[in-house]
Image (cartoon, rainbow, N blue to C red; front, side, top):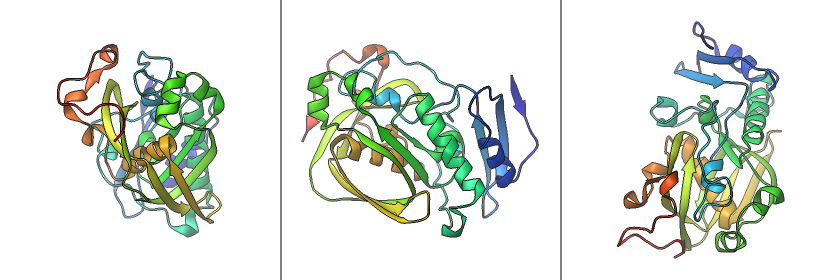
Length: 260
C-alpha cells in the first residue's frame, strides 16, 4: 500500500529514512531541502540499490543474474530528482542525525538489493552523497574473463559526501551499464579508466579516493547521479537494448567492448 503524506520538512523526512530497514511500510513523502526546493523521498521494505543490474547483469557488465528484477525503493527515470543537480551538504551538517540517518539508509538499501553503489537521489533525496562497496563475493559471480577485462577488484565500503571527480589519465573503456532507475535496459557507456574523487567521509573528514578500472566506473556512475545525469544520457545510443537482448551482437559501427 502506498501512503501519500502531507509535505514534510527535510528533518521529518530524514527521520523516516532512519527507521529500521526491516518491515518498513511504503512511503512517498515530500519535503523541502535547504534553499526551499521541494523533494520526494521513496522508502519501502524491500529496498532498492545503485546499479546492480549493470554490474551483475550480463554481457560486459558482470555476472548473474542476467534478468532484470524490478526492486522497489529506488526513484525511477522521469522523476525530477534524478534529472536535476543535487545540493551539497553543509560540512556542519555532516554529523547531524538527519545526514547520518540518510547515509545509514543508503547503505542498508544498497546491501539489501544487493548492489555496489547508490546515490542519494536514487532514494529521492537531493543531496550529494554516494555510497559504494564491491565485495569478493559479488565479484565471484562474474565470469573470469569479464573480471579481467573490467579490471574489477574488491574494495571496502566508501561513503563520500560532496564528491568532486577528476580524470587522471586519458585511458577509457566501453562496457554495458544498467540502472535500477531505468528498469530492464542496458547500454554501452564509455568511461575514464583512472579517476580521483575527493570529498568528506561520514565523519566530516577529508577523503580522497584514487581509483582505476571498475571502481572508477562505479564512482563516475554515482557522481553522475548527483549532477542529474543517468547513464542513458551518456550511452552509445545504438547499443541501447533490453536485458533479454544483451547477447545479441552490437550494430555495425558501435565501439567494441573493452579498453580503448
